[in-house]
Length: 587
Image 1 (cartoon, one colour):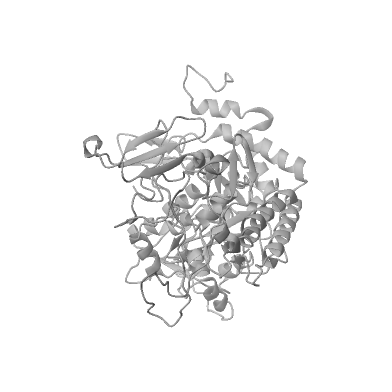
Image 2 (tube, rainbow, N blue to C red; image 1 turned 90 degrees about the vertical axis):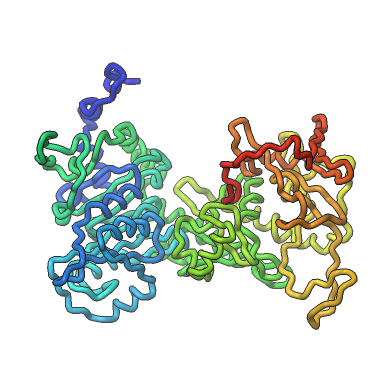
């Protein structure tokens, strides 16, 4: 470690200053950032934060809010419903300040553009926040909104006062240039992690100098004071805006890394314009192929959630959000798609992507549905992808400057091989059966590939028929309640006693209160007590549990290993222990 960083094992503020001396002082890094956004220190100030979320929180805490009074309606915080959780979360702070928070649908804002409002300024400041790029659908919201909001040509709501624009550019600037000389919001939040992939804990709030002096700072931390007294209420902040708001030691080692990040980006790509063109070409190609995929019966394979047609990079970013459908048009859960994609070494984002508003709008999820889904056990970030046959989220792919057409082809190959080709095998289901001997024992039937040794190879295993059953199920020995007389025969039952391991085939099985008895009743944990999944350890599917109801035991087998027999109902061997690990949102 450099001597300038270590001083008797203590890192101090003077170390930060000395490390950034010379040709690459702090001013040089700030200038580099401002140049990246085509502006200068005369117009904007960069305040380093731990990320875009911290930058948004800083705005909520220090914006010049005015509470409601007898003479004014007070400040208002309006935000587009298509916003990240970190934006919506600002309302938690504002509730304590008695500031009204109002969500605005994109369509509502567009309607306000057709009206002319008399702009009245009574000294009250209002804040409107919207994303330059939706992290859900990839739509690019017009940067022209900035000036229209500022001048009153377009207003979220009609109230006297001056509107300030907060632009969440974290997702946008990773693949598109942001020109702050052409579009001048008062506040901009960015994340350098989203631009370079490193460092992970560094972002910034970029503040217009014409507005910066209005920010109100109450807390003061180390490095922000010009002078203060501990014995009386005396405090004078530093003159520089950035110094006032960067409490404590900034992440100077990460700041140093920015120089290398900007240089690498320029040397590898030639600039952000090239990145924009490249990622749009990848997105357009993948979008067109996905939209053209159909099953043999003519039904589409993919349902894409988009606000625009992916034709120009001015309106669409490098994001495709979708769900995979089965042959009958039913949604295949995103968790299942994610597990299958991992076998192709494809990393997918699934769920609602910290953007509940856009997720609700595109998937048709009502507010009451969100609450009822929570009661059913579904929480943000879990693997509960379908409730009552309706999706709780979706799948998202996105492209960056390092993405290639080969990457896109691998993904498209995964979709075709896993869903379309396997669907053509579903009519052979009656002819297929599982053998208890030979290599069949080594097949994982809850996935789409066979894992043998260190080799992962595509196989035409049994592909689960995921189609939705619309007709009434006619059980043997019982009459149907409907008019449809087509019988459905249940030929096999597959149990998964240990979650993420191979299935156990039976022809009949008792049903308990929570479903099939002992189905997904156990999990495998590592030495730290963390539950393992196939995403973390794909070879779990080689473990073959089975249950002998006569002996009251679970037998666990794996190739090359001695089998294990475990009593399943021996109360003498049971000890109560609260599971603190996350398992599909349950504890």
